[in-house]
Length: 421
Image 1 (spheres, rainbow, N blue to C red):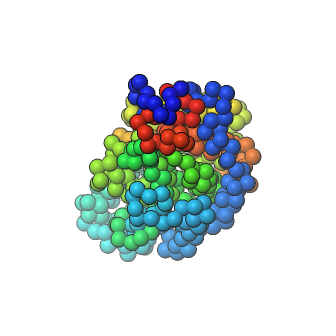
Image 2: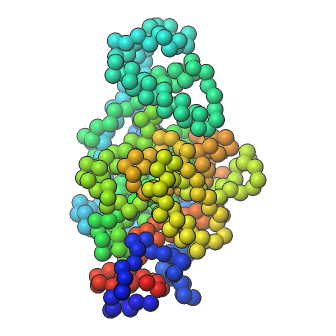
């Protein structure tokens, strides 16, 4: 083991190898996991899901505002203060506004300009539906997205049904604009050695239908718990914990994470992002329609660019297996669509999507998904859920690399808790 006053002969890899930790000691990872509280997670899920209308694009923003304020209050209680200093620990907000087109016959008619009668629209639309040429491109993009999504989950709809979905989405889809302070909440824990290198963990706090206990009060609760636990831990690399709004917004999808990712791109920071962890639905690995008993925690990666996330997947899997050998994990290509990981994958940033189901399992087997019955009573507060949070906590800490208490990332040596570097 390299002493904190000496210099390592060779630089270690950017990602801490958890398999080397321990040497019979508790170690920082075990210490962090011990702090995960089932009662705290339960409290957060109950509080957030009790805010039943968390629809980000609703004209009534009462529900989503309550969830937003609950996040801010909890962060303050965990010791985080609002900050504008990028080098300082704290939280800040990232604002944008969504503008709506009213869902009325008149608004549909007023689009004007391009005849879509060839699409054989349903008889329920008793007027000639026309759109401009730019709208036609958007129509085709939305139709493709919906068709591909339905194909991925093995569901078949008639052409008329698909076109009805497209028209419905076109009529209510918001336009992104960065004018108003609202939306994402970002917690920053600056890295002591590499403050410009960052590890991102995110979850959306809006809901599509009803209480949204699993989708995604569980993800938000996990992030709140992780923020509280890591608030006084020093890391080599910066950690950003991001609460996204408007993930459930269709057809454009995941507007909060899109805005956040676009800011990274605008600031030319893609190469500074070591990895992104997205948490969405981790409350229960058993559903009445799921055969064969409990399932694994899924670590999903970009199926179009699997090599990009190969290293972070391998390191994360190794860390979880080392510290949580009892938790079954499954590595799989990401078959979701319009989720918060998509925008980072498109930027070729290493990304892992944590969930209890793959996209295919979600629609085929999870009977509570996007229904009013997505309630806290279906969350496994004493089993799978806290274990999943521990796994995600390990993943973030493993990638950000904890500092040795005495060295605190200030010297030339890279010292880690119990690490034989």
